[in-house]
Image (tube, rainbow, N blue to C red; front, side):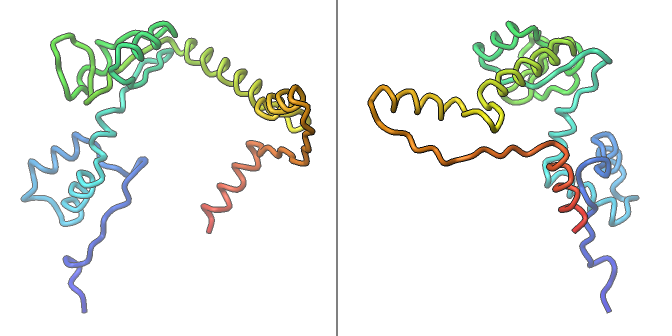
Length: 182
């Protein structure tokens, strides 16, 4: 007969079943009063490095989008050209590194924010760029067309027997749902 205290029951971590940072701190402060399951939850949380994920999650007001960006001057300038600005308001209490500038930093990344409209425009432009580079299955992809032009200039025949098959969103969702049921 096994003793329940010796059985390792690590709670499922991830998503909404994770314990928050504040709860973990509260539990650690009251560790003498914690149950075995609560102690295991705290240890599992630290071992999975989930506290960093909690720290990197920033609550923003509606209409604002933010992301962590490499603290590289070129990358920061690129993001500023896209409409982002360095955050010194929303993620400051999430920072692990301080350099006196008031900018939120975790390791080698800084937090930048932009109006949600900027993010939507960026996503739309990226989708257009993807569509141009990856046309429908009835036309050739950019690489194939480039190769055919170069081969034609060199006087070489091109034998193209390939085809393109694209997965649709509903097909991907149903495939994912089927794998989750099994």
